[in-house]
Image (cartoon, rainbow, N blue to C red; front, side, top):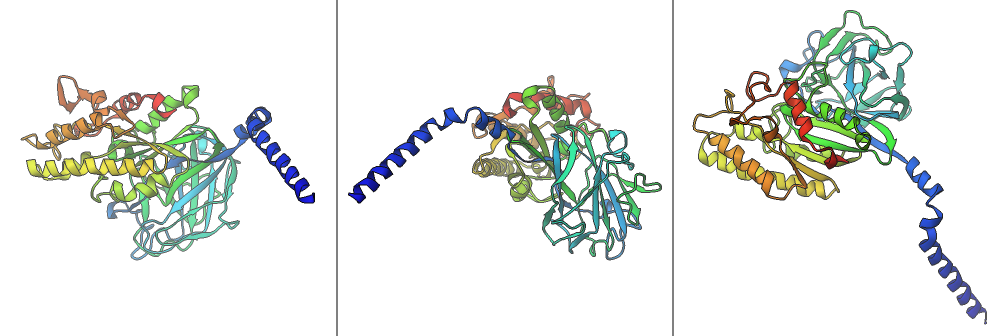
Length: 431
């Protein structure tokens, strides 16, 4: 009798639970929906692809010595974020460092007048960054470190100043950086992390050590990342102007309510290649680090391959081989990104007829470019196609860029050319 009562009670409880599961959407559609909307997550709002610093891009003397770099040095940098938020955290990379990277102190602030590439900060905005509750941290060789979350209101599309001091410097000449910053940074001896001005500081147009800024954002906020080379890194754009095509794409998104919750993550470097190492690791090697591991990335634009064509031998056999290898590499990128739930958009490669390094008189590289673009447009392997080639080529001579859109070398664009690339991306793909 007792067993029967227990069984009946269990059935009643189970039935009640089933009813509750069925009815729960109705009962939680009010307060539950509001609670869901209030949830926040970390979103990558700015990024710079880490690279090994070449000798010509090392900090100038006295900030580079015989065996160490940035000894007793303050490094002040500005970065242009995309989406904003009430809380941020930083990532510093020692991916290519030859020794541990000791950061003595780090601060963030708003730059004077909100400008990019300035050495002064707005009074009263400086805040100390901590790492596991401590002001100092050491980044192991090959690793990165993420700061503690910091309450700091960051507006969308604004500039942020990050200042770091290295008391002992890094005891190696293998330094992690992003040389193609198109933004001015400042170096000064001594600890000036909290100073509003840096009089007499040495300007350099490179970023060092800092690799990412993340913001705490509403759950609906996502990021689109770009895998690219110098055309995405912004060669030909305006120093401190933030008018690369990903910058201008973000500006377009901000103009529409449907696009205001989309961060743009620029993971490009001049000279980068898909198949082989160049300036930085090849795209296949860096895909996990630079794309798949980043916060809230749901879409990826692949706009890379022209350096693979341009550096392969200008013979029919070599160009057929690099064409086949590029197509196989694109398929690998799609497969690996799809495994992480990321949609992948293929962008067609731009013309380079007239460029002294890449153009060949017999047109073998141009034929390979056309073959690659035909595959991008027609294979169906990408979730969508963005036709950058069509946006900036000369209608009368499709193997060349429009004469008014390049920066003088028939390969890289000027700000107007980058504007047209940004306009060629349908915002509906990113929503």
